[in-house]
Length: 196
Image 1 (cartoon, rainbow, N blue to C red):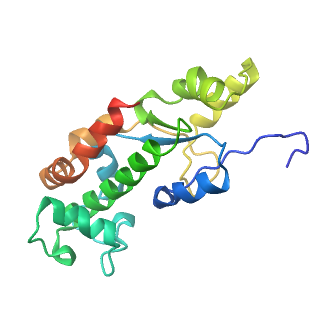
Image 2: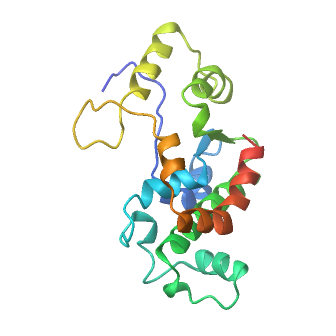
Image 3: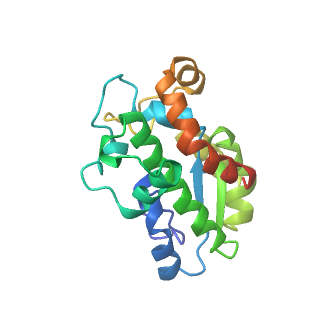
């Protein structure tokens, strides 16, 4: 804790996307960003192991929220939601988060921005922090961002170095992941990407 700090940044897990409207009500002048990534790469982050059925993106399978059910039914009115493949359910769940982000963006009066994962950390340094968040970027700030971006944020041990994995995820994606991603995630991701 540093008593001199005047700004606070929150990094919220993906499921928090559905709460963006509540954050906008609580903090009506606060800018926010939604970081998006190529759908196949996101799916591979969740479903690296073939046959894994207990990924974060499938946690709501036993009681899926109404927006997720509606999204699935919009693609296939006869779909049995609880019987979807793991890949389809995961892709639909992730698409529902992207749809929530898109809706929040439309309602944000310019407070929301989309940032492509592939553009990090440069987009933060060159655009988001100085222009969207309105904070000056000195050399020390840039150095700290670059240092932090080189650390794996989800590691269970401190200081694990982050390794770029986009190419590996693309190359090792199973056909089921590609098909589910194309069916559910790709349409909303393309809308978001155009606004990045």
